[in-house]
Each structure stands twice: as structure tokens, then as C-alpha cells.
Length: 373
Image 1 (cartoon, rainbow, N blue to C red):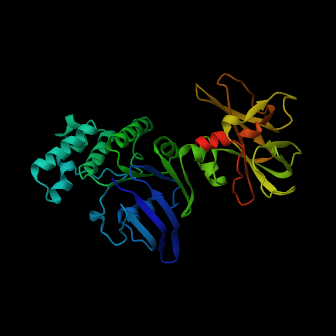
Image 2 (cartoon, one colour):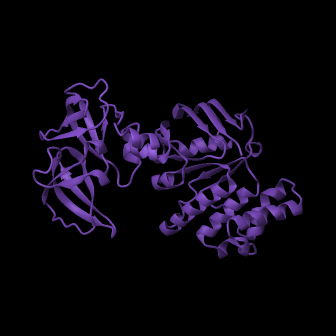
């Protein structure tokens, strides 16, 4: 096992700056997930840790030792790609043993390593088969097993579940979690799927356009996003955003007034906010409620577009003049609404987020919840 430290890491292709000033501390045995939209630089950063991309600036250390100029084979890492990259003419056993054979390991050592990895991954009964005889999930296990046989200090995974169907991805997420518990090895995992990030990670690194937007536990990122980008990226369905201006600030938080003259109190620390400043209220779908007439002084008028039923829950989609992308509210699964039906949507002040014009979040007053995150 080993820690991984990045200080001021940058990557540039000619005049194109792909990554800038990345600083991260990945602890020994930690499961860290890099997540972000396509093109944000997460796979490039992983490949730089692996030694497959040169580092344009900064310092990378594995187990406390600088490795900027160290070739991939000597970094003590093993990488699993989106593509299984298995040799079709070889058995599973030979595919998993191939790297050790090239490294000059002796037969008993190779046999022990392969059979131990196969047992961990529950594919020990398949070692005589060829890749074409396996399911996608089994092939991915073989690719992981090939990495395990090398006994690396750090495992690197580059979107390893992207080629699998939805049901198999869920199953393999559980396998990754179990594997990390059993091996207790440092793992760095890249995905664009925030559900994978939330369910697997000890720590998530959210990236956008070559920048690290926030680093923290899944709970921290969900309940206390540092900015609007993180708030909109983490969570499914995404957070609702409502545009308004500051009406007043006080000990109870910030009162936001929408262009419709409706209001929402947000329980945040106002800092230097002043009346008249443009802000955005953020409310997650599970906290947005259809309010009875006269039931609350806060909220905004909306009209129903459609209701999406998922069996155990339902999501109401509505139009509102203060939400450019519309509003989404989680409602009881048997609740009925008609298209075009008018209603009022709002949330408790403690369940709201607030962002300034630049997208930075204000500190929420939910101290007990946030300290637990």
C-alpha cells in the first residue's frame, strides 16, 4: 500500500492547458474517485499518475518518493482500463499470468498469485476458459485479476464499468467495494457517473475544465457543495436552481426575493451579502414540496409539465419563471397531478442552499449534519 501526493500538477499540450495546479493528498489504503463531465481532465490526471502521460509542471509522489521521471513499470501501480484488453487466444489463467511471466517470476509464484486473485474475484472455476466464453462482468474481473497478481501499491481504474449494462454495473460496484475491503489497498477510480462515485468513494475529487472544484466525502459534497457546479453535478436528479436577489439578511439567514415577488428564506451565514445582490437558491428534489394554499409564506408558483413514476417514488417536473431549467420535486408515488396544473413549490429554510453571482456557496447553518459529513 502507498499514499499518493500531487503538488501543483499541470498538463499542457502546446497552448492547450488541460490541467492546472492540482493539489491532492490520497492516503494509504484510501478509495478515491475522480469524477466530472467528459473533457474535464480526470482520465489525463489518472494517466499522469500511471506514468502514461508526462507531467508539465508540479510534483507527483508515491509512497513519499518523487516519481515524475520514473517509468510506469517501476511506480508500483497497476491499471485497469475501460477496455478489458484480454488476449483472445489465451485462457483466463494465461491472461492473468502474462504480466508475471514477462517480469520473470517463477512458476510456483505465478500459480499462487493467479489462483489467489481468481479466488478473490470468484472466477477460480473459469480459469481454463477463453475470453469469448465469458460475460462482460467476468471479463472485467479477469482484467482486475491481472492487476491483482502484480501486488501493486496503488490500483488505478479508468471507467472500468462503462461497457457493462445497468444491472451488471450495480453488481460490479458491489464487487469493487468488497475488493477494496479485502485488499485494503490504495485505489484511484475515474468515472463520469456520479452514482458510482457516491457509492464507492471514501473521498471524491470533483473536476471541471482542468480544475479541482472540491474534494471531500460523498456526504460532504452532497450536503455542503462548495459551489454551484458541484451542487449541480452531485445528486440525481440534479439540484434545482432558482434566480433571485437578496431582500434582507439576518440571524435566521438570507431572505431571497424572486422576480415574481415571491420569497424563500435560506438558512445560511450571509457573510458580507447585501440587499439587492443577485443570488441563486439551490433546492434538491427531495426537499422541494408542493405546498397547500396558504400553507407557507415561502415558495414559488409553478405549473406541472409531467410526472415520472418510478414505482417506489415519483418526480414532478414543473415550469417556473424563476427557474430557467424548470423544477423537479420528489413526490409520493401515488400522488396525482395534471399537465398544466398550477401549484406552489417551496422548501424549509434549512434544506436550501445559496450561491453568489460567481457560483460560490454560502455556509449553511446545519452544523450537526455538516460536521457528521
